Length: 123
Image (cartoon, rainbow, N blue to C red; front, side, top):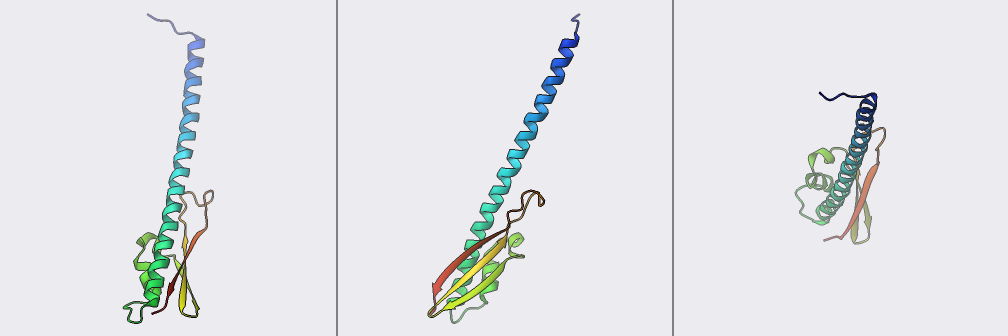
């Protein structure tokens, strides 16, 4: 039979503590990576929505207005809080889409909004 000493018990406790520290670090890195992925996706969706809204605004015979077209081009979970702004400059129109970036941990990882604009010539 193997006898365990107090030294062995301390080592097991140290290993458990190191394990908890490493796991905490890995979970934190994973949450940050996921949050950055969500932010990148929100920026991409804002860009797509701005382009679709600008295209819809330039057509004379469009079947929906620019806000509907922009929202329809996005994922539903991001489209609800999206704000569109229209600006006409002579023979072109600029649409800006502002998408709120969802936060995994709102109190800590709030990244605000993603804004993208698209300019198209009028028909």
